[in-house]
Image (tube, rainbow, N blue to C red; front, side, top):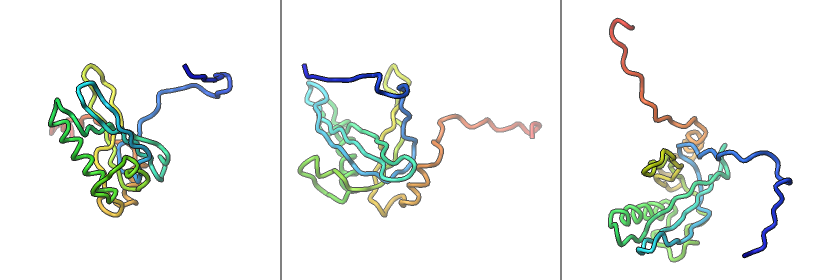
Length: 165
């Protein structure tokens, strides 16, 4: 057990559910990359954290678990390795020797929503793709998209019948 001191009376306001980072493009940098063992079957992941660098959402973070070793699923491993390759290309490092090699280099991230896990309707913001600064979406496009309202997944209205025009 470790000592931990906290007085809830010193905290103003109430805790609410945190809002997700809206879908869009953001200038961001990786602020954390930690290797983690996901299970006892040998699956290993990196927990990568990005922080938005500018605009309305400056300082907000988004995290992804990226699988890089998965003895039980070659598909899961290949998806993770391709995403790590994408990150390396966007930060201009074809190879890394330490998780710290990912940190602090600004690039553009495309944020989307995760698929709900089985038995849940909860989705999470996640990085879908990364781009080097100066290619892919421009910094201006990233800033504009980041402040635009989030897209909705609602269905478009059905077309009107000829007599309803």
